[in-house]
Picture 1 (tube, rainbow, N blue to C red):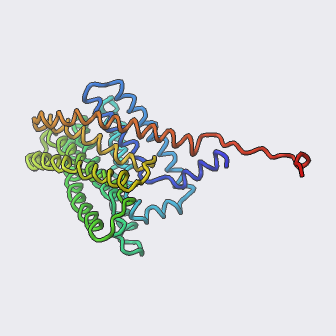
Picture 2 (cartoon, helix red, strand yellow):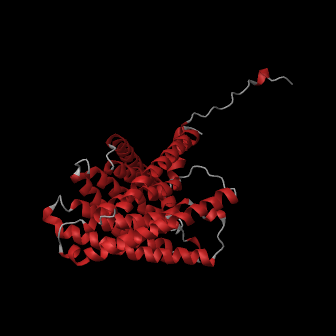
Picture 3 (cartoon, one colour):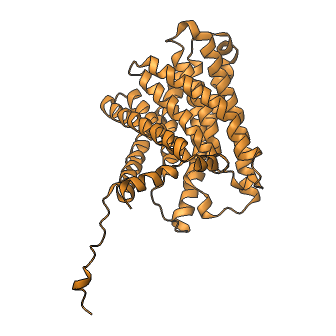
Length: 358
């Protein structure tokens, strides 16, 4: 099988949630920038930009050439919510680019992401949940459903970050930020109910506890960051009406995100150590890296916005855990790409028939 054939096969089966690579690289780049590690932060930013461009090209290729596979993913409730990673990846990348002064690019990314969020926010639940003939749908509820929350909160963060830049649109951006934050909060409650109901009503096998369950913690963390950003926004009617409420809820949600760490770690131990499920590279592993990075940034932001030095110290310390995990997963991804896609395949030479000894 030549490289072009392997590439086509890889694009056909491209995971909808692969933009989690951009989310992970972007948010850890943000954390490193906040801590003053500019060289490392810029390196991850470059990786995030390259990954974003490559994934957009591959996704477009898939849309044009493999529509059947794309429609199949959109109708699969266990995979469809992964498409929301494009929205979150766009906004996380935009926020990091703002730190480099690329405000117009960040604004374009927000516009694209916000429109996509509105469209997919209605299309995905219909095609994957309500519109499918497969029942019961609840049996396929998993951690990817929380990516819908992450996408909503990423819109809130990007809008809040752009408010000081576009003063003429400050009230509109404030309204968008508060609206998206509130929607994300209710979506978290809904996703939590569905995922909990699935875990209670159906057998939970070790193979079911996949990496995307970490997004439950990541969704909390990004909700905290969005809340902290809104608290720091300039005065606007929507912000003034909700600032105190959002500030208080952000602290409560951060506490819940912290509480989720032990059960998530225990689930991984039960899956890989007790039941010996092999830990091999899969694109879903980025669903672990992003929550770790987002939790670190959440602590840093919340510590500054609400004057909570202990929370800030936790975030700064945990950032290095996220960096180490990012390095491990990134190295595993490169090895996976080399061994499955890029490495030349050597085919055995055929022996001429006249040299075959009878």
